[in-house]
Image (cartoon, rainbow, N blue to C red):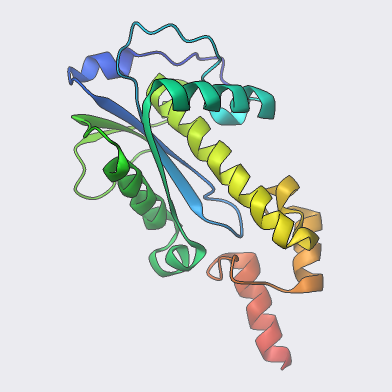
Amino acid sequence: MSTQTPDFSLEIACGAKLVAGVDEAGRGPLCGPVVAAAVIFPRYDIEIPVIIRDSKQMTASMRARAYDWITQNTIWAVAECSPAEIDELNILWASMTAMNRAINKLNSKPDHCLIDGNRLPRDLVGTAVVRGDAKSLSIAAASIIAKETRDRIMRNLSAQFPQYGWDKNAGYPTKSHLQAIDQYGINEHYRKSFGPIKERIKNETSHN
């Protein structure tokens, strides 16, 4: 686990007035949307009373506190790509599309974007930053917004489809989730292009 603490070094190095950090959540799950967030800190001398770092290294309560502070003190936006769009575009380009949508929804247009990962969405002026959520506070904040938003979406969907346990597994292919899929089948929230789902559709078709 990285002990690196993100800061504003990359944002300041851009030399741009408004820099957006951008990240996504939900590339690996078998169902639900992929969610992207974009966050702009209006100034870099701001006092931050919560922990902001790679969302995967935070507890749920830490993330919830950080989410509340970020949404009240920054310029932010969130967007998603549906399972149908993921099947159509593939998960990489669906993630990029969600990122573009989040950036376009920001109330202030960023002069530069810092994107978590090793490539940029099409037609975007910015910098791809590998492990960006461990280096940039803006990207780390975006990772928190994206993950918190997606987890809430999955909890809401779980209320409609409790048999799949999405409130606990967030759509990831855990053993109990795969067993539930085998027992109850798939619905419109599943990504039909993903291996385990594709495999099950194929088996079902061959048995009919």
